[in-house]
Length: 128
Image (cartoon, rainbow, N blue to C red; front, side, top):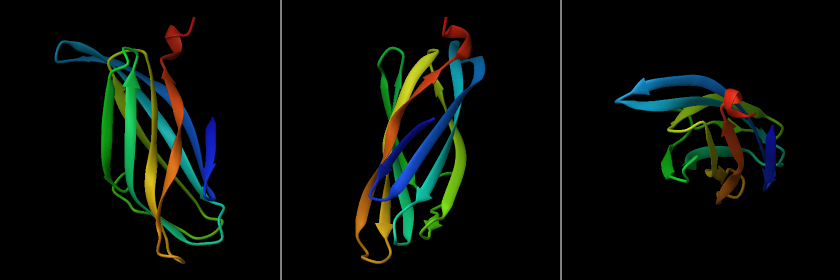
């Protein structure tokens, strides 16, 4: 598990390899990840959007951004936890992801970024 705290918001990431398949004459490797967002601050916050950098084994980088996560913009009161699962496809058995969430503090009305720590994606069969 990878973890990081930014401005009182703790991000924890767990990953797993889901398998591989051919699509459009290319091999694809599917990875899943579970992210837990814990509000350790004294203020209520809302996750408004996300930004990801996804690197594959050949160091090709794809960026992904958009509103919320899995179609939601969760509000977390102090002490609350929000967990979701998602995934990505790579063209090789190894890669990494990192990024940030754009959030707003309801007390101060200020926007701020919460870092998503870099985490590795690895096909279990290829780790020898």
